[in-house]
Length: 545
Image (cartoon, rainbow, N blue to C red; front, side, top):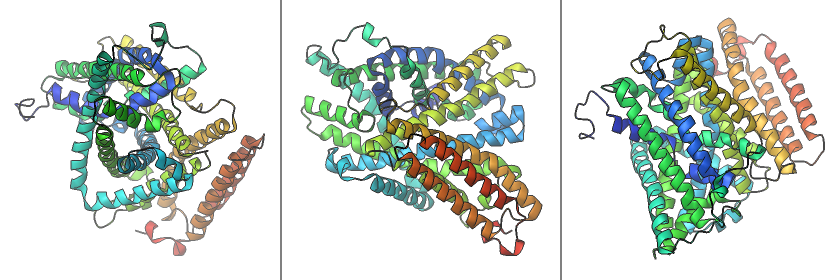
């Protein structure tokens, strides 16, 4: 670190590059998209790196520089261009997008531990969907407690897990290519030609673009450090070009490595969940290490996902509560315990995470739940990325009002057009990403996943639109709702969700219409109950001053 940063006042471009790399790409990202697109994903990675990652990263640099006094956060960018409410709503959508990510991370810990303890995927056949959901929920509770009492241990886990994750990707690529040479060029994917890397531009292909965006976003997390560079106008582009080059190396060669061990024309259906374990098991046996490499990867993934879950649960809740302020965030959600933790915010986070898990219980098996959660991440995460391009367009429309040390494309009109193109591409990919993946199109499971995709997005985003109204009632009456109102509204919502999920699990031909009707009826009743003036003498303590 001292060699990279001889002057401690500044961050070198090499350090910023390493920080960004850990937030952008991982071995699972390569695995997910290989299952979606096969060997043609190599073509997609090349196009995405050149025409998406590079401009996206450089736009983030200018936004971080323009709003350096606000800390460079995504919501502060939107707040700076469009005011408090849109800034709040951006913070909410960013937080809401973290919910499926946190659930997915908790799921991965269960999978990691199964492999780390048994060295096989057979344990997955013994776990029912309900057990999988309960274990995932327990992970949330455990890591809230761990984060509360052992925060320093999470820093250690982050260092170990994050560092080893990058190393294992490089190990995968190097050993795969050495093994290819040793085997005389034998590949599992046959035939392997240039034409096999060109995708078929159909609906399935375009509906998987969102997952590529999900795999490659995250550079905005290093935006606050742009102004801490000695010469950001020169050093930041170096860091982002290095990021693009390393991303290209890892994704293109990583995908090629998977083609060595997996037949891209006949990919296992559980590749997203178990693919990394399969490939390290095969490499380990190829090099005479037995299951040694598999176990090493399993524990690396355990450390990485444990640290990731703890950070997500704490950081995303704190960001939401502290960043949105008093104007739009209800008082009871901002309440903190004696240790300064937003306890009711944690409850909201865990409750919505439980809601997401319940939606997946009626899917056929554990692998379907895992794949569906990834699909959901591929919807909400790119959707939030749209805010970045929107903010960039706003500052370039009035560049004199938003000066910055680093500028991406000096011509404002050209820069605005580039931002608009990426916004449209991301928005279209997000909408098309709602289409379920990994299940037969038009099947009962396909329709059920489509319904719960829409329900998840509506609930996660819709709640953010409701909270300012609740805050307004707090300001007007002192409390938002009294005990009978809270109890009856929450009970109705839970009943409506259970009924909707149960209908979705049936094979009724018009179940989508039935779910829509019962949801509208439930919301109308909740609205009628919530309109009444609350009884101040009969409120919960959480809402009291």
